[in-house]
Figure 1 (cartoon, rainbow, N blue to C red):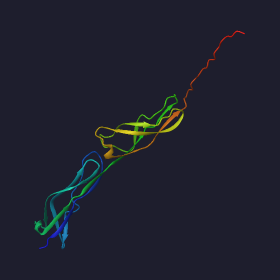
Figure 2 (figure 1 turned 120 degrees about the vertical axis):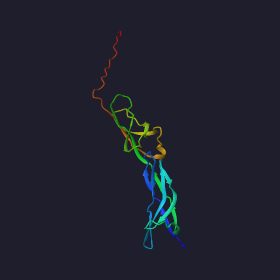
Figure 3 (figure 1 turned 45 degrees about the horizontal axis):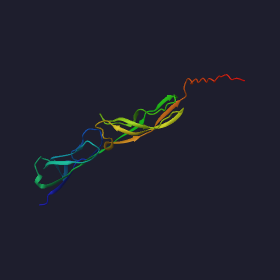
Figure 4 (figure 1 turned 45 degrees about the vertical axis):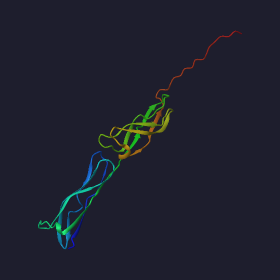
Length: 193
């Protein structure tokens, strides 16, 4: 006798990296209709789980049991196949820029010394410990600063779990409120005629 074929499809899911284990579980449907009769499949579990950004293939476990509307076990009349789902965890987006800096002219170069997150965020307990900066402004005027490199906090995997973008910051040197006073003393001397 030919058995009815039931194809169970496990749920798939997408998520953004958050530092915690995430999962997709269950099936798209556990009821199927043949010749106007609705059958229910139980006994199977499907899960795909992961923590870091990437694609995780799911698993299906258990033994399928098919019941008719009255709750009778009619598993022998069916071939049940179950396809696992998958979980795709995307990298988390975060944008960094050097904090804008400003000072009055003092003859010394102005450089960026800290950074700010302008878009996105890090997962709890993760982040950037420090950055190196490029660009400086000594004379009165404005220029841009940039982040040369970023050092992650311990336990933060910037390369695999984050899409890090960088923006430029502003360096501004203004006129001094009080001008430097420079007094020049001419040399004096005597000469014989």
